[in-house]
Amino acid sequence: MHRCAMVGFAIGLLLGCASRDSARGPEATVPLCGRLETLAALPQSCAAGELDAFSQTLSDSVSDPAEGALVRVELDDAARVRDVCVESGPGYAPGRARRALAEHLDSIRALPPGPACAAGKRIDLNRYEAKWAELHERETRCGEQTRITRENQGPTRVRERTAPGNFGVYDREYERCMDYQADWISLDAPGSTRPAIWAKPEIPNPPGPDAYETATRCKRLSRVFEKRAACIEADGWERLEPPPR
Image 1 (tube, rainbow, N blue to C red):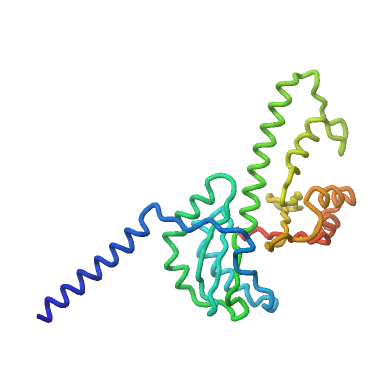
Image 2: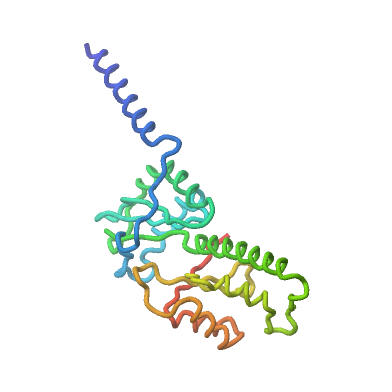
């Protein structure tokens, strides 16, 4: 009788695992994030550096499966991972991230808790990579749009750049396309192959001027990178640091 009970228990356990795996399935995904105001707020009371180790642990857990996608992690009242979602974005990265993260959810939720200051809050990961993906998609689209315009208008309408800082008509068209309703500001960073990128803080309705106004004023202010960067940050834009390679 005892042996039958053990066999029954084992079969039930296997069926339970199979049911759970079947429910998750190969096409299971983590959800897309809802509106920012519906999500938990970012931590506000953590001391400098208090979140660094935990944020890095989270980042290490999601960076490979979620490359190029913005991932938002909500924590419960014990500062353990409660929910994970992926922000919509260009290309295939968000979809790939949603499928890949679904396979890692158990290990992500099993991570040790974060500091008490993060309990009930949200941590955003991959912000630089996600913005860079948006920027790259916009560069590709604007480059193609400008090329088509040049071909349609013919060579007689093409005016090349004639001096440093003096842009031709197609350069201006490209810049207008890049700036149109952008929610980032980018500058070539000295000594780096990747651009410096600024974004508004991840809060509902962030204050301050829009990207075009800030970028235009700060780029006219100086050609010195540090002065431009300080001007951008004075308008409330947050510099996103690229992950180490």
